[in-house]
Amino acid sequence: MRSNESFASAIRLRGMKLTRQRQLILEVLESSRGHPDAEMVYAKAKERDPRIGFATVYRTLALLKQLGLAEEHNLGEGHGHFEAVDKTKPHFHFTCLKCGKVVEFVSPQILRTTQSLCEKKGLLVTDIHLHFSGYCRHCRPAGSECAEKP
Ligand SMILES: [Zn+2]
Ligand SMILES: [Zn+2]
Image 1 (tube, helix red, strand yellow):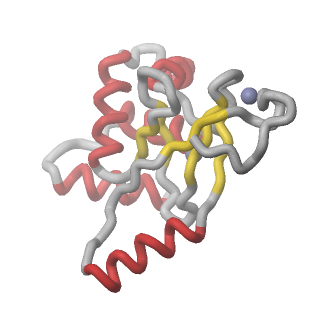
Image 2: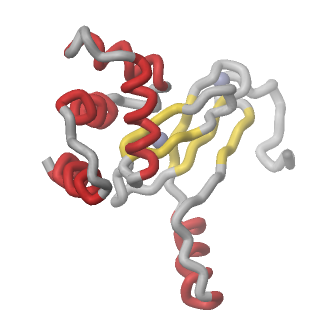
């Protein structure tokens, strides 16, 4: 598995070990649909390794984030949600304020902006914090206009 290889080499570069539990946490994250929080990753990892501790899950998620293998999103709640990074598909998130539904979307415009920041201003973008919130199709007040500005 490609990401497991890059995890292994990134972790070795830091003089750390790719333990079975760390590997398991990455696998759980990669096989998760959506955006699990640390508790959800912990619950899934525990099904496969009952001895795994929440602290290990928490620390490993932080490590994956540091290594650029996972992203943490604030989806409008107090705690973070995690997602394995798939560099080929950068996408953004919209959270419904009423039902909590998370909608993912791609934005070629935003990617073009980062490209031109680099080409025109010499800025290499490594991280984008952008989170949209509002009301989904089902929760929108009846008669609300699409053009309504936040
Ligand atoms: Zn909704
Ligand atoms: Zn996502």
